[in-house]
Image 1: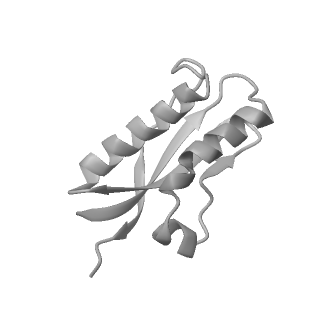
Image 2: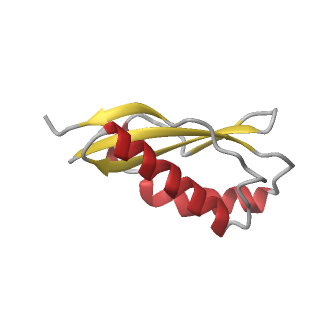
Length: 102
């Protein structure tokens, strides 16, 4: 298995309260481990125009599975925070780091 850092972009269609943002960051905290911490990556980056990026680590056999897992995790966290898919459409994920342990 390889550990991937995946960036999942998205857009908040409407304003999101700070408490919701904090809840999202708390739920994603378990995915912020060695690779992302050593690189100083933020779990959630918000932009002024309502767009955001989530960076999280997943272990998977390949890039495709890592991206699928990352989108599922982000969608689940957003749903747990009370946001629907129509409130927060997600974009195409991208691999932004790889740690194969070599």
